[in-house]
Length: 178
Image (tube, rainbow, N blue to C red):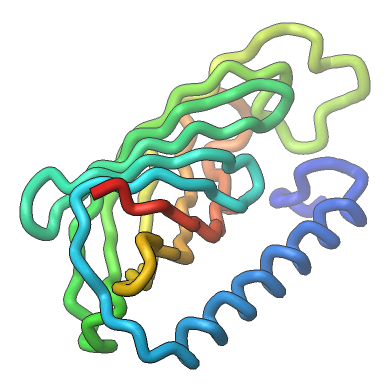
């Protein structure tokens, strides 16, 4: 039994994974071919392309420290995640910055946190509560008000059968507000 398997229909998930990988490769190819320079920003809002991602908001709390909020739709419900992220100097140029941090999430879902739930068992509301860690790489454009990043947010659950949820890879495109 594969403990990471979400459900019995893996074909749909693998197609989505290939699409996410292809988009990430195209975005990164654009970044490396660009001669734009990065600008620091205070606040940005955007979308998150991931399994269970939807919207995110990132705000600078102080120099090098950001707070990020993510609203996600998953498992027949919704969740919110709050993260604190510290920029990490990686010397890839002023266009890029890396970040790492952690936070907590809370969700209400129509599915138990189990491996391969049986048919008809997702009829009640379940609480999803846990902690998250994050690591990512962001590219900030200077000539247009956008930033894009790829990151990984695995989570550790306090409730349910699965204590570790590893499918947290995401691509974020954010509009810089100021």
